[in-house]
Amino acid sequence: QVQLVESGGGLVQAGGSLRLSCAASGSITTINSMSWYRQARGNERELVAVIPSGGGPTYLDSVKGRFSISTDYAQKAVYLQMNSLKPEDTGVYYCKIVDGSPLRRAYWGQGIQVTVSS
Image 1 (spheres, rainbow, N blue to C red):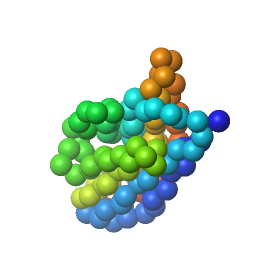
Image 2: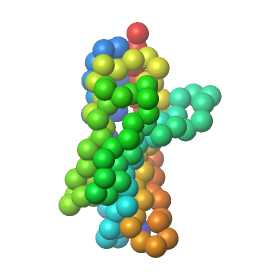
Image 3: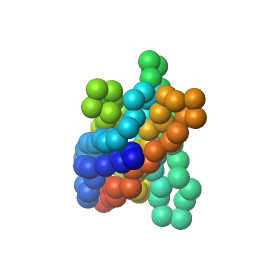
């Protein structure tokens, strides 16, 4: 059974920084991609950043230049460094890992709250 555990969220003032972490435990032997999503109240979940195995990252336009995704495949972990935070970055952030099996199974974290005050 695979479990993703997120940490690092919280309350920060506009202009501040947070670093989210997500670590997977369980039987993931290969990874296809790792990503972060977010969902603001009343909105649909949106992709914030994704990094495929062996490839470069892709970011949501509104976070380019402020957010950075990084990975540690040995630890099956993914991170999101968030700088110059804005109130519109507020939401629940979810990590997602897609395994490298032919089924491309997707695993999600439980979500972590990020609140940016103005």
